[in-house]
Image (cartoon, rainbow, N blue to C red; front, side, top):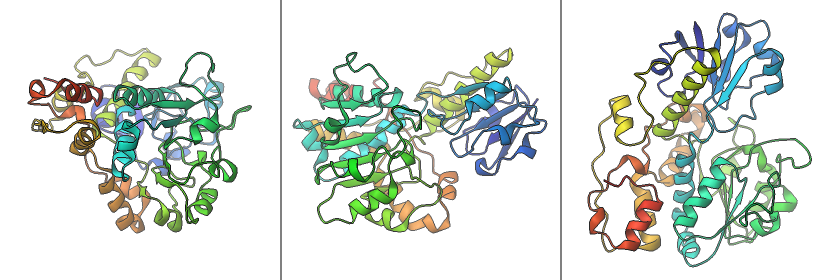
Length: 382
């Protein structure tokens, strides 16, 4: 069996080797001719999978190593009897750490949240819900906007205006043009104008949810909110002035931890076996973080973390997040190297750990509130 895969998928050749030969290609360059005799197609968000790509091919299964699937024409797949799968929640923890790093790196935003100000979440799917749960465990109040859900089913769900009034707004909605609640340009000139000037907006879902030209016009003002952009409306193209005016910028890598990418590949492997009636290779290791990651990849086990016992609250949250991921490092790389290409930054992205990869070596010596923070942050507790 021939398998065509985006070369940016983690360990795809090794994980899928039991099913056939894997050809790894540039995701943006995958074309119809590449798929003529391929039975499995594995993509990320940069490949548009539609009728033009699939016509007159042997493809029987399409999998995307992403939590979203707006780049997939599912009706085109259904008409051709092609099975489909996506890796829901695979990169959720990575995105959560990205958001917390952005908050912790912007002035006193984290302290303000710990003192009672709120986070507003746009999109209450897998990632939005996980973000709310983590922040709630850290003692941070959240509300969320998702008009596709029953508003009476969860007290967290509120109207859009209430979310836009929050100190931090984090965007995780699926990209859709479906009525009656399309998300394309949900944040436009009018809705952006409602956001207070001392707020922080984090866009780590899909680029076109925010009208980038409208955002640029707002950011040109003297007293506007701060913006952190991981996703861009016209990727891989990035408006230089918009980049310059954002507080932090990254090249669509919020979910790019090694753990999350490896989990996505394994999830698709299992789903492909099920969809095609094939027997999975039982030697494929579990996709747990930490020691399971090292067993699967041969990576060196990280040294344990000794948490400073004097830290608590926002200071402890910030310290813990800095041990695994700091958004400022990716921002500096983005600003320095963007001329070499958006996709190159993604392709050559360095190995990134999650906090759960680092065992805590003095957990029992911490105070009860500090232990609670460590657990809420997803630390690996011995």
